[in-house]
Length: 391
Image 1: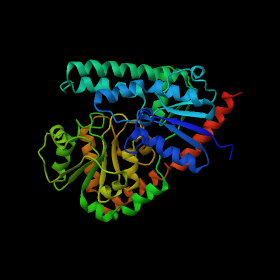
Image 2: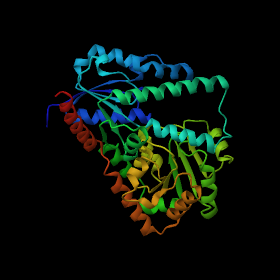
Image 3: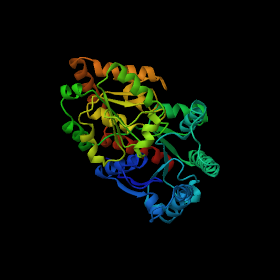
Image 4: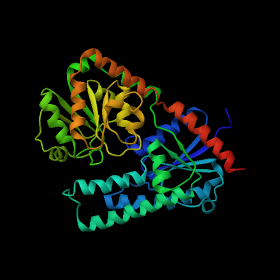
C-alpha cells in the first residue's frame, strides 16, 4: 500500500449515523482507519457544542458553518493531505485556507438535482401548505445562500466525489462543468450486512407475511404524496397486505393525514429507531417500497436488499445505480403510482420459488456495495489526484 493518507472529513451535521449525510462520512472514516489511514473529522457539534434550541437557530448555524470550518482548516492545514468535505461546506479557494493538499467536495445528493425536484414538486402539488410568510422568506433566502455555497465549492475544489452517474451527467450537461470527478457509491460494513442476513426470517416465512416496508424520513421527496394511492391500489389486489413505515421522524397523525387514512391495523408506524434495531424491524418484510424522487444513493434500498428483501423503487438517481443491472424490472418511472403498486402486487403474489430467486438476487446485489472495498478504491483515487495536485 502507498503511504497512508491524512484525511479530514467535514460535514455540517452531527456525527451520528442516524443522519444519512453524516452516515456516509462516519462509516467511510471507520473503513479508512481500518485500512491504516489517519482520519480526523469536523462536524456541526465540533463547531457548536450546545444543541440548537430552534429550527431557525439550527438553520442559521448551518449557514455560518463554512466560516467555522475555514478557521479550523487554517489552524491545522499542514496536518492533512486530503480534505473530504460535504459539497458546500468549504466554498473557499485553497489559498485562502492555506491548504496545499487535495480538496474534495463530496455530494450526498447533488444540489442541482434536488433543486429540480423542488421545482417539480411546487408545480405538481401546488396545494400543499408553504407555511408562514416569514418562514418562507427566511428559508428561501437560506436555500439561495446554500445553493451559492455549493456553486462556489464546486468551483474551488480540486475534485468532486459523486455517488452515481446521473450526478456526473448533471455536472457535465446542466452545470456545464469539466471539474475532475470520480464516482464512488456507498456501502455497508460486513458486520452490518451479516446482521441483516442472520436476523431475516426464512424466505418462505416472509413470502407468507405479505408485508411491505418503507425506510426513510416522511417527506414529499421520498414519496409521502404517493403512498396513499399506492396503499389503496395494493390492498385492492392483496387485501391481507400490511405496511410498515420506519424512521418517519414525524408524528403519526402527519403520516395518516398524508395517506388520507385513519389509524388501521394494516399500517404500522415507527417514527424512530436505533440503527441496530433495523434488522429485527425488517425481519418479516416481504417486499420493500421506496418511491423517492431524488437520492444521492439510498441506504434504505441497500439495507433492504442486504436483508434479502426485493425492493421496488422509482427510477431515480441512487436506486437506479443499485437495481438497474440485476433487477431493472423493480425500477418504476418517476411518479407512476399505478405501476409502482402493480409491481408490489406482483412480488406479493408471485409463487414461492420465484420469490426465493428475488431474495437471492437482492442479497447478491447488496454484496457489490461494501465499505471496505469502496474506501480502498476512493483512497486510490485520492492518492492519484493528490500526486497530480502536488506536481
